[in-house]
Image (cartoon, rainbow, N blue to C red; front, top):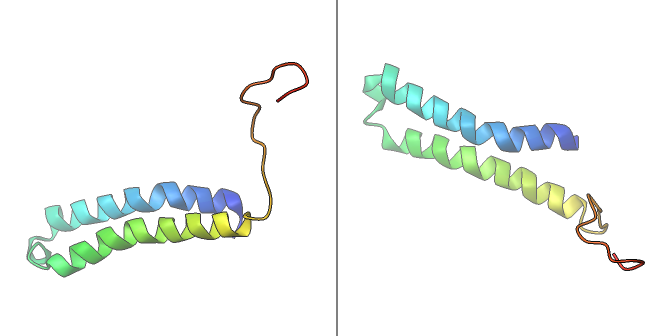
Length: 77
């Protein structure tokens, strides 16, 4: 999986889970009583991005990526 897609999924999946749960409760009142479905959607909306973040971390565990220089003092950085 490409890194850009993975980062977008990590951001959008929890938002999508919240929207789906909100719409289920708002427009489908018969599903309000099914707490297991709502809990499964909420848990999956958080667990899947965690798995994506974990896979990105494990894939890059061997390397160090320098995103920016935090503090530089002469030759020491």
